[in-house]
Amino acid sequence: MQEITILNERRRDMDIAAEEANRGPNETRMQRTFKAEQTRRDYEMQLGLVKAEFRKLPAIQIEQAKCLKNFNELMFNYHSQMETLLVKHRADKV
Image (cartoon, helix red, strand yellow):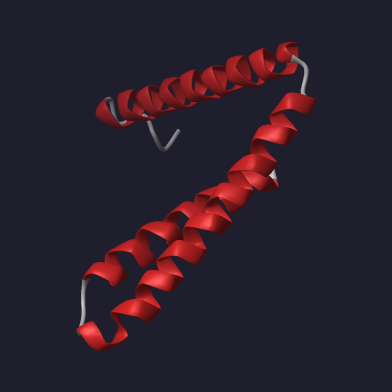
């Protein structure tokens, strides 16, 4: 879902703007504070959009997505362990 990616970007922008608002000379503090407030509003708006999208999805699809994510993580771990085992026994080039 693209909305979640955008939400993560907005969160990162908000964190950066908040850090910048606390640093630097006092002359530009008002501009930085305004930017931090604006990025916070952007984040909250995007969060609202993501919540609205999730309300559209039936609960079963959300559960299926969670199961698929867990399955993918397990398969990744399995393949990583198999690679490690093959390298350990010098069978990785077979």
